[in-house]
Image (cartoon, rainbow, N blue to C red; front, top):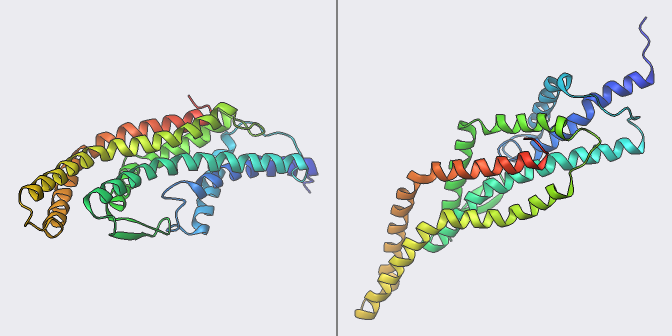
Length: 258
């Protein structure tokens, strides 16, 4: 009969439990997998499967009683690390949604909002289009596999028992400014073109006051806006590649992965 001591059982549990908390927190927060479209049980099963595959490859865990106060502190650290990694990815995805909303407000489609089933909020139709393109490109370029690789490498650069350094938290705060700047960079060509269209209608109204600018200007602005979006979609891949590289760079730096 095989006899197992309490210390051995505690070591086996900790070797699987703490990585599970970090991986599961990432999957619960990150885009695509962490949305409301994916049931909670599916996310949990996916996290358990990934943890079971990578657990034998991870370094040794701290020898701490799983029922002690130190164990609860380490568990909270793993949850926070995984959540912050998923939060960085969420900010990256919302960059394109914010850019689409800026363009929609400029072209007069700000009132045309759709229900986003992934996040449970109403967003502009153009923002939803940009968000769908970003999601499809992320999956097509195996971005989800890169994220899984980063979270596995984080156990070597940021072992269980250590927390994020202060400069990593500062990078997340700076990341907010990058989000608004990048969204404006995506939207500014379309916004500039629509501004020229609006100025043109202003000159026409000044030259011919009998023209009804509201009856003529709105449909023309809408048509030109749709044409500008169609033209700008051709450069969407280049913009996405550059910003995805920056987002993954921030994600790797967050956990010290080189």
